[in-house]
Length: 378
Image (tube, rainbow, N blue to C red; front, side):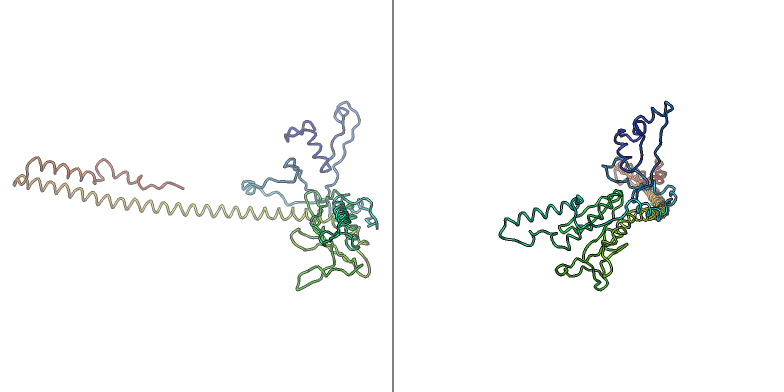
């Protein structure tokens, strides 16, 4: 432990806690000294992966199950083989059943599960507050005094205790304790436990409040948290009540976590294949677009060079005409002195300077056209 922990930058105590959290056995105290001395040692085998637990252990991340998103480089790399589950799902079912045994719902509970106990204590507080109050509002009344609500809490309590045998961590929220969620390692399973539902135009809605003394219930294990799509549903009827199905309900609740994990692993692998194909298509599109843009850039560049060439040729002609014009004026001036020598010479130098300025052949300016129009790459 002291050697391996350095690989992850944590203490041996932190590594041991991480292993215990996911049922990975660690060497007992003095194991290596006894082994080095030739003593008899026992290596505890790795137990089967608990339902809902991923096959990869994440150390760190604030104690949660946070994963670094895959980078584009990783997604474009080799796709790992599809997930395999050596243990058949029926074998997992049998293992869960052996751990659970028979699940019952006693008429009276002396020890409530912590997730339910806080609702019981809130009800006690409401009851005490009402005892000394002369004005009672329905909002302030205890929420779980009716036979329906007490039965509902007893069923949940048995289910939570059974789930705890396989590391289930229940969570209830909402004033009426209607949002129910049980986490099994990285997987969470939502359930509904309430009055029987009826169909209305294809949608299920809660039935009307029960009459006095009626405590009919239905329980559904949902596929997803965001909707009411159920994997399994049990309901009170004239032949049996939910209490007679508690072993089956608890087993399917725990097994649902494993089924969710396997479905998620397969979905994630399929998504990765699709995402890699999408990224490769995007890369091809970007390459084709870059090639098209480069061809367009080269076309614009070549057109700009031709335009510059035509412009230089015209400027060359204009410069030659200026020089011829200066020669003609100089010849005329020699035969007919219409201006002073100084004025003519000043004009002649200015005119020739203008010819040199626009003449691309002077100073090799024509060569710069191949560079002047070059566009920077983007």
